[in-house]
Image 1: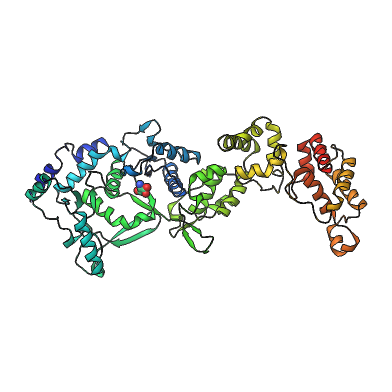
Image 2 (image 1 turned 180 degrees about the horizontal axis):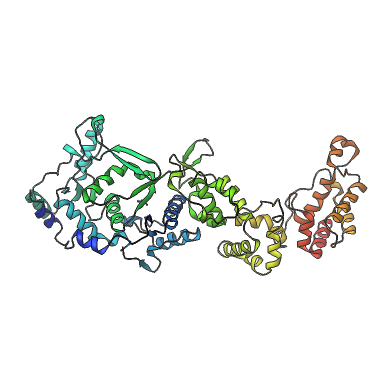
Amino acid sequence: MDYNKLADFLFPHITKTPEDYEKMFPERELPEGAKVTRLGPSPTGFIHLGNLYGAFVDERLAHQSGGTFYLRIEDTDDKRYVEGAVDIIIDSLKFFGINFDEGATKDGDIGIYGPYYQSQRGEIYGCFAKELVKKGMAYPCFMTSEEIEEIRAKQEANKENPGIYGKYALNRNLSVEEVEEKIASGMPYVIRLKSDGKTDVPAEEMDYFEVEDGIRGKVSMPVNNQDVIILKANGIPTYHFAHVVDDHFMRTTHVVRGEEWLPSLPIHVELFEKTGFEMPVFCHTAQLMKIDEESGQKRKLSKRKDPELSLDYYRNEGYHPAAVREYLLTILNSNYEEWRAENPAADIDEFEFTTEKMSNSGALFDLNKLNDVSKDTLVRIPASELRVFMADWSREFMPEITKYFEDDAEYIEKILDLGRTGDKPRKDLVYAKQIFEFINYFFDEYFEIQDELPENAAADAEVILKEYLASYNHADDQSEWFNKIREITEKLGYAVKPKDFKKNPDMYKGHVGDVSTVIRIALMGRSQSPDVWEIQQILGEERTRARIEKFMNK
Ligand code: GLU
């Protein structure tokens, strides 16, 4: 069989040689140990937590080692292409602090290893498909979908492995003349890998290969024996082929990708062998899982059921990027929380991220845990920064409240810092939407009575407030203020100590907590809030008195 002839016949337009490409895309000059990683999203417009999770690993590996992290757009499936998708990818990741050094950008490609859109790399894939045909390692296949369907049915009936391999690979040995004839008659064809894997031995006699996965350690699997498609009928490469060619010529050292690709690893290993390219280190990340609310079972996060899978969710709700990063690291590296506990003030990038500390059995995503991490993260962010963060978030998602974060910086910063200073800071702030709801009683337009008066003191509300207003002195310090509350409590027949009331409920109408809750409700509209005295100091005397009066006159 004259494979050269076949290759020239199939790829007459390919003039460059593999050596040309090796020269065009030389090995990168990077410091020893520097890692080159990439994100290869499809431009579908939907960017999810899994992408961010993987991107985070890529980014850390590259930037911790003085390497390069680039963006490659895997747009070989034009049916899924969504206008503006690349901008969405870049912007969303940037928001979470992930920046690329090279590749597709909003203003075109940056870097000498491009083009970084797979759709523009046709000639390169053609060159290597041609090369494989030349070496007798790939061949054109004209099998029709009916033939393939028939084979599938037969394999199913015989309980055999599905796919095109061995005796089912009907076009493996066509002569050049047969190929020419079929093409001349207009038959469409794909290019298939001619696999070397044994196809006629029992499972226990299959050959195995071993690969050292960056996350999983030693991975051992049966070698590939499928004649997989490498170029589709329209000349576009499959993922398998594009991955091998691109990661070689973009000089990727570490391929971080979801574990859903693990079953295809045998194909990739065979393709790396046949092309003679050096294999990168594979890092197969665990799937993001959650506990299903209904069944209580672990399951994969789903686009349909779980809004939190979309990165937009975190933007809309207003999670601070630092909190999301912090949380992702807690699920990415098992030793992260310990590190954070020991280094509460350290910059997150000082943590040494390693793939070895990653879970390989499904990373559990938990919104409640994210919220807890977020509370801890926000406590460390100064009010002045939080104010700017809130202003930026609201400009996009709630423009009607931006003024509160811009007009009076002093007022809003006091509000944001309420109870956050001191040894035991309150951790009430979680994400922008929640923060605004939590503090909105400071703004008259949003102030409303949300909670009921306490049962024990409801009937006395007016008289409590009357006494309160009469004794109110804005200049009182916290203890003077509280002494006055105690006096009112006693005077009106309530217990100053809640435990006295508990012991002798018949002797009192209620206790000091009921009295102060009445004041809380008049001032904040809520029965729970940070320290009342501090809130009054922020509200100012006029607003404080006005709210009490308004409540009394209701
Ligand atoms: N385009 C592939 C995906 O979106 C990329 C997988 C990879 O990183 O190799 O799943």
